[in-house]
Image (cartoon, rainbow, N blue to C red; front, top):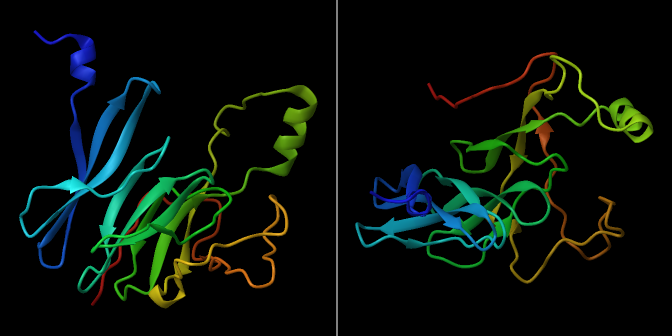
Length: 208
């Protein structure tokens, strides 16, 4: 009978998706990192039925939610936290360096490709109430029944392969600033799609 440690060390597979009429298969593989005392999720991919191989490697984090771009699946998009909250990244199916698409302060919880392949719709939490932050600074942490969650809403952001230049990286005047220095690229801004005193739990595209 396997021990608890052996059981926890077993790899598990999830988030299976296909692209380009089934020629490509991508999935998450979860492993246990005993040195860092955490679970690690990375994306593996199989091309034309070949043996799957690891496609992403997020240091001290995970890569999740793989999704092939529409049409001929030239891009694989995924979520990862690489030191600036969970954002959307893309990488060419042929391989190469992953490129960041979004730079949302609150991070992103889920996303979908637009059927055109020219944008993403994503879900993120509303910004934290400033009054709560001030109260926590003054009195310390606290909780209020039925008010601990933040609303989630939908946003849309453009995606253009031509705008991704591997030789450039975005840079800002200060760490906390969104003002971009002259000569630096700028992340596209998300456009809000839903708003109100409700939360979006799930969503999907349909065409008619």
